[in-house]
Image (cartoon, rainbow, N blue to C red; front, side):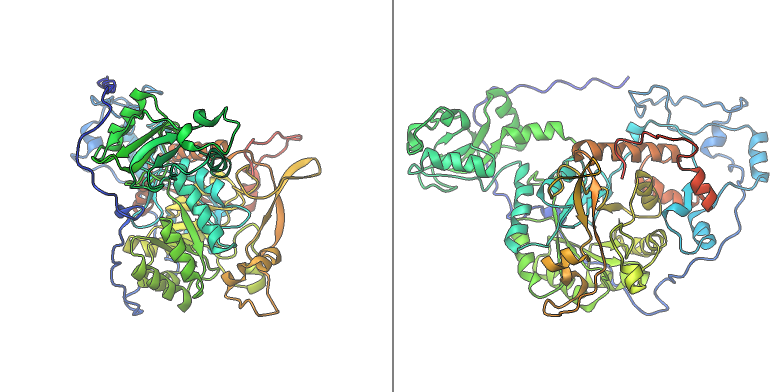
Length: 613
């Protein structure tokens, strides 16, 4: 059995004496920009994006002598030898081992003579032009691990990693600060929409970044001239009341005390000076202490706020107990490695006026900028990508939307760190009907990801996700993440007011190309001048049923993904992608009758899933 980990040592210190290094003024230095490889657009140099020719199906050959299976072969049919190293076993499900069942020589010979089941991904695409999610299934593999053993770690850009491949769509009825916070706490990331003023969007990003901190280097600070009413106002507007008091009223001033909720709960006179109510006997940590040391000191001293001071007693940072609890309650959180703040993205357009928006977002330490265009292959977007990378090299940039390898090549050449794939496939999008332009989503993901993989560029499957199965299929086609709109709309955290229709509680959900959204300002997404009087709508407005809270819905989606990968026999998304390249993951086409067969049928009064779209 694995060795027992030692219990954490309880510290009795009240200060930590080491040298302190100032934190950088950026959100994450580890998200540094890396120069993309040079890309030639010579037709002879770009791999063809046409559909691959179907290759003859390969027969299952015998294992070569000396292979792991041959060396472990047993005359007993189906025997599963137990590995002497049991460190990989799931504690919840004893008996799972990290190897596959052995087959006798006769059984291997029978398999060799039998044609393999299904298709490889390349064969499936060649067999089924215009492929989309409902047109295929994945064949099951061998299960030799538990769902808890499945890793869903992935990348959204070159340098930003997530623990769950979930991204919220930058729509004004889907993704604001509450959704972005819940997405990050559950291992994904939220992209805040830009159908609002620059100040409003920057405030939403600020709310996400301040929700969970490590060292708070810019805390709210007051001077001795402040009143109790000022602290009460902060509590009502910002949601916290632990305010340090310094002689200058600013960070860097000499720490005099701190005002917390317990100091003002029973104070009736709001004109009373904070100097009369603040706590002056403080537990502090000295500059240079690590976050782990500070957290241990906070736990041992049982304080809610821990100021960090230098040798002159000047306040330089603050740590909150609530952040310690959030780290405990949400271990999968997507956080910045240095500041321990939640990861957050934001969308921008491609106009010159959007450059001021980018500057305001970068000042709030946004981690990734998503350039939001219905058709991303434009000179305007390429220029915006180059400008962002030149002026804010630490900010990751996702380009899109694209559906062809040549579109992807143009944006990769401009320097994007990720791609958004999909055009006209969203539930409220009418681009394919109105513009006759787009591509079936499964084919788009296959072609773009196969090309972008050569340059280390992750791709986000955007649109067409209607069920947990579609998430699995998008990832199996090569996507690193999935972007969801309708799947998240109607949740408690999504913006909008509740209303009732036919006895069901609902929220409004609209496309960014709908008339309502364009009237509010989203027309720039479609390269439409605000002065133009004729606008072509590329979306509709509707409503979605209450889905409950994302804090229950996202874990449900995550477990669906883990169990699906278990059924396929893949322990990680990386193994899934490699299995596609090696032809290990097998696919099967679905006829219309097969699709009907795979749904609920021949029963009435069906009680569906709690989390259905």
